[in-house]
Length: 179
Image 1 (cartoon, helix red, strand yellow):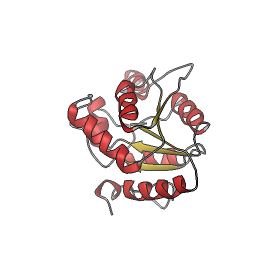
Image 2 (cartoon, helix red, strand yellow):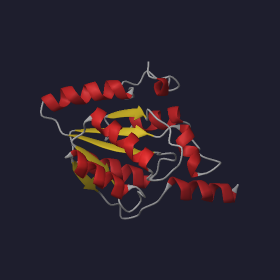
Image 3 (cartoon, one colour):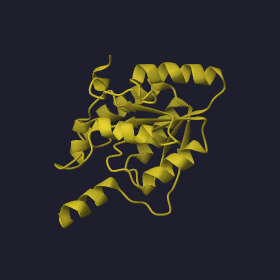
Image 4 (cartoon, helix red, strand yellow):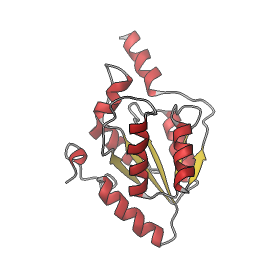
């Protein structure tokens, strides 16, 4: 079992190690299905996430979501993540618009578009082989890196927008102030 998957103890068939995701996608594409990939932290699930997944699913047959490890989420602040990776995987797997979920197979050392991070995400995208990368450029600080990666790898980039962008970080900060 992949190390990043060991601590996501689940019976939910929508949550798989990245190697299994890659295999499922290969078979789906043989059947002519279009596969989209979204990656992120998704710490506190909110309407912006729901809108993103719903809109993304309208553009693809299979929507795959990669979820940042807890160590990567901690780069957003000392109190993060609010929900551990197992909880975040379970929550997203319960959404009708999300078909497959996987914990990211790596931990970022910094939350930037560093050369190292760009290479990690490029390798991941090559392994999974989606037809498109999907994000919300309004709320995703790394949308340009995703756009460039899609262009470099010859896949589509779908930039969606939510009328009311919000963030898990702003929600977490609000909760911390009130308590």
